[in-house]
Image (cartoon, rainbow, N blue to C red; front, side, top):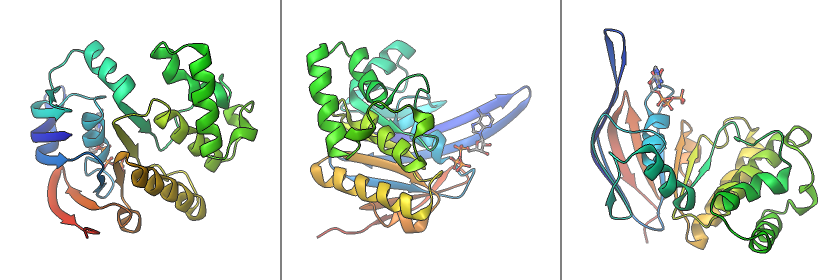
Length: 227
Ligand SMILES: Nc1ncnc2c1ncn2[C@@H]1O[C@H](COP(=O)(O)OP(=O)(O)OP(=O)(O)O)[C@@H](O)[C@H]1O
């Protein structure tokens, strides 16, 4: 589903160049749960943003669902992203002015689903994540765990090909973080393909495969949980 070849990201600030990612190669197949593990500053967010078509690499190739996407224009990338990729952010990324229902509904509006279809889909997701009772609440009225459950709902509402999660438990207590990890594991069991960035080796254990990053390089790749 995703094939990255020699991905490199260089940032320039005046005359200073910093290499954030160097020659990263990876392959992610449909249905996998892959964890990108590394310390702060190792390049996890940059890599996950490139895989999620938010950022462009400086060089290298990226194939998403058979298409080379590393050089697409902003509009083409955002079109692919809208239906195909669901993001879960450390800071939840909810819109304060929209209630829970409207936050989850928003990606469907961009995709021009009818009101009726939106109602059915959002009701299903609210019930699946056991947050139906919160549908009229605004983000500031929610606990951190509730916010992240809504973040998960918004990410999966379009039934995306890929879920990208960047430190999804970074603002949660460990008990709440565990709950989100359980939700991600069960989404993967349902068939969702997941790529998650974390600095926690414990959380990395949830994935089927761990790609370790250090200073922008892939240092090891471990395959586990394979029957
Ligand atoms: N837009 C930017 N401008 C300048 N430096 C940046 C930018 N984006 C990332 N960096 C630098 O690139 C390096 C990698 O950042 P990145 O956020 O990808 O790492 P990370 O592993 O996700 O770290 P963290 O867990 O702290 O978010 C860091 O040293 C960071 O300071």
